[in-house]
Amino acid sequence: MSGLKEIRTRIGSIKTTRQVTSAMKMVSAAKLKKAQDAVIHFRPYSSNFKQLLESAIKNFSGLIDSELTKPRDPVRILIVLISSNRGLCGAFNAAVIGKASDLVNEKYRQQAANDNVSFLTIGKQGERFLKSHKIKVSRNKNDLLDRLNFENASEVSAELRDLYLKGEYDRIELVYNDFINAAQYIQSTQTFLPLQFPAPDENLLRGDIIFEPSPTEIAEVMFPMWLNTMFYKTLLLSCAAEHGARMTAMHQATDNATDLLGELTLQYNKARQAAITKEILEITGGAEALRS
Image (cartoon, rainbow, N blue to C red; front, side, top):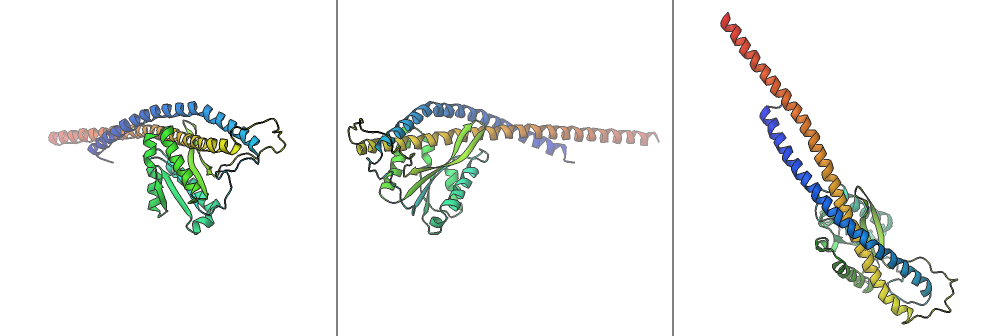
């Protein structure tokens, strides 16, 4: 049985750990509330913009000519891996890294064999894992998570769009954790470029519709706006999922520490009782020896 001093030391250490995890849980809960509000407030804009754009696409059928929508033979692939800058968030990072690995193995195995799959990381945890496994990371935007707003996200979105238009990549995929609620998130992939929309309605009558300016000019303004919107929404969802995962992980760690404290306290009391009993027996034995 462990000595009393050793048990007391462990109890003190676990109490300190429980204080830390409990504080981190409260901090994550506050950050989750802020991130969740950002998702809720941005969702109507994103949803209405998408509905407006898809409605316009139906009327643009055969009238637009945009490089952003033209399908290409996917030879050079860029995967944008969105993880977190910090750990202690359960399986959040491992899950999204696994999703990116599955995407490469299932969809882009041939391109990977030809060394035509590159990664752009948003999150230090994802970059650290990829580099430790000798996987090509062409660039990173890890600092974006610490200064996340629509303007900064749009700058990165514009960079990705320029890379695509210059022909450096034929397809850009987003891999991220999609926020469901505080305790649940799922790993998702989304094709960022080329843009993909539902097939237009070829039977739609457009005789009374006048486009001003031309459909192509309208599309060239709306498409970048939609890319910025889609990219920012993805980051918001990942950020909310991260805080939810960390809050859950710290809640579980706090509960585990409480359970362990209970076990150690019981062990300490048993050891202390055994020590006292031993001392009593020794005193009694000594007294009996003196009488004899």
